[in-house]
Amino acid sequence: MPITQYQNNTSIYKKGDQKVYDITDEKRAWYRKISHESRLSKLSAEEGLIDSIHEINKPRFDPDLLMPQLESNGLTAISLFSGGGGLDLGFLRAGYQHIASYELILICKDTLTTNLESTNIYCGPDEGDVRKVNWNIYKDKVDIVHGGPPCQPFSVAGSRKGADDERNMWGEFSRAVNAMKPRVFIAENVLGILNPKFNDFVKKYILNELTDYSITTFKMHTADYGVPQIRERVFFVGFRNKPRLNKFTPPSPTHTWDHLGKNDSYPNCLLFDTGLEKTKGVRDCLGLHSIGFDNLAPTIRSAFTGKRNTTSILNSTAGQKSWGDMQIWPNGIQSSREKASAFPAKNKHFRLSVQDVGLIQGFPESWKFAGAVYQVLGQIGNSVSPPVAYHVAVSVANALKNT
Ligand SMILES: C[S@@+](CC[C@H](N)C(=O)[O-])C[C@H]1O[C@@H](n2cnc3c(N)ncnc32)[C@H](O)[C@@H]1O
Image (cartoon, rainbow, N blue to C red; front, side, top):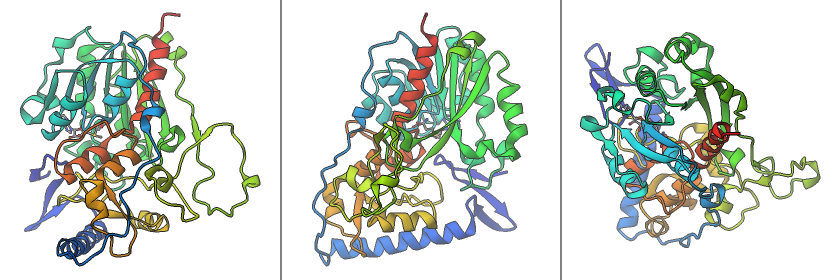
């Protein structure tokens, strides 16, 4: 049992007299080292000891083009665990109207209120905690309920306690769906939940709880939809009317990324032409000059995971090499492109801004995140990439069409 539960999803457990955080020792040491190095170089920049070496970048990637606004489809939606609004944005662009959004973290209220047309945005422990909501008020009044219950109980980055993790909110998701009785529910999570270790969990909290629904499960990779990041997620989509499920087809990739991760001299003739558009590499997306190599970003880490308020998006040591190969520095993210340009990384690699990280997750720059840098990175790193959400939303709407 955690002795303290932070709003940022970190729990503290007690081991003897010691407090321990639910990340591995290796990861903790590594996060500490990164943040120490970053603090030192920031001090040098503030003292004017470092000259700018990268111009302010002008991105060549517009996520709006990956999810053009569709006309209203007449379907209403309620968003649970809304975070910074990745799923909400995808559903909005696909023509849905949100009736309400619920999220525990208070700063998300500013983000969601600024960007969404819905006025019923409930955030913070008092009004946004899904455990406290009486969902009967929405009974038979909503077509779709969507949400990504916290993934830490199943994430390889955490201690994978599943049902024993206090952050397991799948029971709450099922309670909400069973009370509201939407035509469809859509739930998103990390691939870890598909690990055989969690088979009983999935049976107990999803399949056996949501018995009024016919459920399908599928995986999606962000880069298959034009977003330059390695990020795989699983979706559970349940239809109350079984024949509708038979009309549902999970989204198909719109993009290919076989060409990435190879240097420019890699012979093109070896690549199979799928006829799909090509996902751009990160350097290309951010408008950086060619270094003869480009790739997808490693999975962005949520800054809400861990003890301290971090401004790093680095998720693993493998990721560190991958960023290095692209000559991009994934730590000490800055609040603007101007600030990032004025604070070169020690190894002269390109320093990222929160706007750049938003793009790498598929958020258009018009989507404004509220909060300090670590809070913005937390919202981005926790989110479903909006173009991925968009394609799921469009597929569900197609299945519900009266044809
Ligand atoms: C994986 S994130 C969801 C991200 C969101 N779907 C998006 O696409 O941006 C899970 C969210 O659930 C929120 N959460 C956790 N416990 C909650 C609770 N009891 N009530 C409401 N939200 C909660 C977390 O704060 C976190 O923002």
